Image (tube, rainbow, N blue to C red):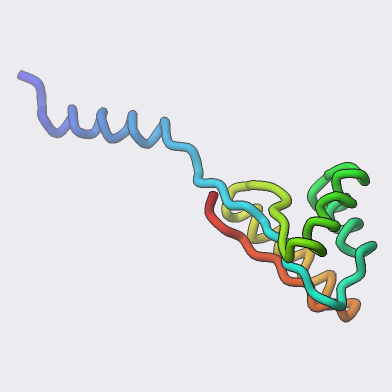
Amino acid sequence: MSDPTLKNIRKTSKKLKNKRPRKYCVVFLNDDVTSFDFVINALVSRFHVSSDEAENMAYKVHTEGLATVGSFTCEIAETLAYEVMKQAAEIGFPLKLTTEPV
């Protein structure tokens, strides 16, 4: 006879192995103070996008009020958002970023 508890453990183990971590997107929010250059530099240095992509994203933030710049695991998304906001605050910019589940 087979043990029913062992079967449940195997089923649960298979489910856990196949599950990927949930992704979160990082969103830049527009303000009237943060410079275009700072946003572009943050996008290039922290999010590793090209200069052209960064300019397009910064323009989207400016015209539409926000722009999603990438999706990452929760910890990475929150760390990136925190680091950029901290850097902005150090030089007097009120830039805000949010993380949202995809």
